[in-house]
Amino acid sequence: MVFDSVSAADKIAHNQDLLTLILLGLPTKSLIKFKCVSRQWRFIISDPDFCLSHTRRHHRHGFLSPTALLLKGERFTPPSEFSIVPLKHYSKVPFFHYINDSDVKILQSCNGLLICESYRRSFLICNPTTKSFRKIYCPSNSCYNFLSRFCVSLAFDPLRSPNYKIICVWESYREPCKLNLDLYSSKTGSWDLSVISFEVDEEEPIELNHGVFCNGRIHWCGYGSESLFFDVENECLETMPMALPVQMDALEECRYFGESRGVLYLTVTYCMPVCLEMDIFEMARDYSQWIWKKRVDLGDAVRVFPELELGCVEYGPGFSGVCVIGSEEEDEPMVVVWADGKIVCFDLRQGAWKMVYDLGPGIKIGSLYLGEDDHLHHERFHAYQYFENLSCL
Image (cartoon, rainbow, N blue to C red):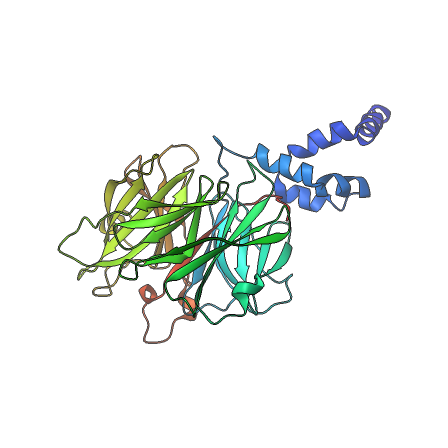
């Protein structure tokens, strides 16, 4: 029996096609470790075609699923420190210790890759799963001007192409309100300069700093009646409508703009004495309008989780941040909220609040960086979805 087992192992080891097929079925973290087994295994697992095939095997209905959320505080957290909220299993993500740069800022997460800002207008494309990164410098025409606006976004969908593109929107001090769009392609390793030039209405601002990649387009959130999106493949700029507030008797306090499984979502919270309600909008598939889905009341979460202390800060949001993610079992998404140091979510299909992650008694997310006179709700977070995969740079 021992001889037969050894013989079978030898047959697999000498049949690279069969070995590759077996390795494709293994989890990402296991493959990272198995690179050390032998030179042959390292060669197979490091091959870009293998990495792409492995990533494409781990999708659901044509979309990848995040395995964790990275919460980054706006005011108090050090440049490279995050709170990690596992969505599937606990996975410690070692951020940036492999990059010789002490001041790295995440700008966007996109299907397994992160685009980060580094020193002197350079950018890093990172895959934290494989601890790999590539430094890309700004095109010279936008880098050396005194710019009032300078924004970059990442477009990457490994289920359609192994290549990614960087969209750089910048404004020269010589021509205020006129924006130029440069485009970098990983396939060619070069920039196309001033692909598009356009103007924006200053009275209806657009949040160009936070681009959202969805359905092959980079979308920006506008605060007027219209906003913009850039079709990456066709290299054209188009308009889309923006949602109007439902709570007409109160000013808007904050909003979240993001996507889940090919659908854009917008949440709006209003400035009220007890700010615990948010409206959730979904963009129609044909981009014709925003559809109001539901008004969520965080007060209902307190009845489910009495330990939450919400509504403590007058005219301030009763939470530190929000994110919309897909549900593994259902078509409807979940609205994830970090409130009072805990992570809860509202399941839109079931209409119920659930606990996503609880650190337990003692330390709460965000509490380490608060001053004596600050309340936990004063800290605001950005959420970046983390996709565990082998995507190459």
